[in-house]
Length: 397
Image (cartoon, rainbow, N blue to C red; front, top):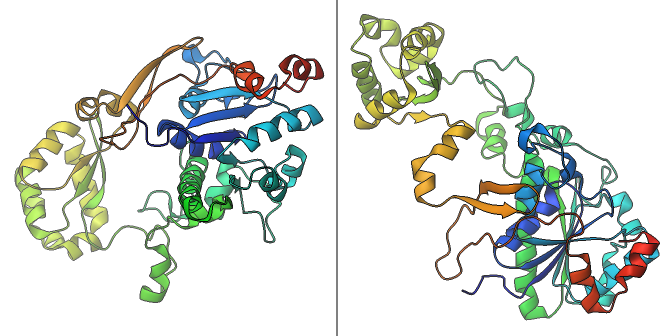
């Protein structure tokens, strides 16, 4: 069956998540993605766990296996003359090049857009950088923690009831995933524009700006309310909070009066619920310290899913807080075929998240496992007339 991006040729250069996730989205839609890694060491993601059994192995990293399925992988040292010559051959035949090489190292890796566009005027080149390619911070380096902080997200993360506690980052390399999404979309748009102009484009993505653009309503707090957005402490209407049950966490939302009355019925109409302290949602917000303790005492005896189902029947919008195990065991996600399993020649069977979308005419497909280091070097380079053995002798592949 035809794939949405079948026939599109994509090159990827870089480490960890940003470029790899952007090109994964292309690969999942059917593009032929060639991932270029340094010889011997490969992508730094190969050195990030988790690993099966906790034993590190460059071909078994869970992060690498997820990010690079559906791609082919080659090794080239782009800091050598031979590596850059081979790279130029690849660029001449590519539609898209995505990289997250740091701006200070781009020239060393042959990633000069004007030079590459002269080789291939139809090339779309997408550069992902921590703070963009221009501006006072363009040469700064950054980790995921730095980017969450610089993008304004970390200050919003944490317990809303305790705004005095330090900012928090989310687990993993989430800044890279956001940069990847924000790189893939304009890259596709540049490909679409090429249909009209016949020419490629240089797309530049600042990870800091990608994060700052998803802060939802936070910017509006100042002109609308005169407030600098923060966790803002406990909400003025309650209950709107997380509670710990005996087997996990649940999110409780019953800020409308009819929702509160139904929740009180679920709790068996305790006497304290009729106290003047809790007579309306604003009073419940003003006296939330007392209410929270009473609710927590009751919830601690409940099962998450029993409480969730009781609330559903009463049309009160509670939600279980899913753990990773809950997601993997979810009957709904399994019924939709969200998870996919593929055999990897070294790691064995690997189960991973599939596509968060469905396309009727050109469905998502897990076609091939992530490449082992240099697995497709000869397969990709030899048809271009490149002497792979000479590159290996030179240490460039």
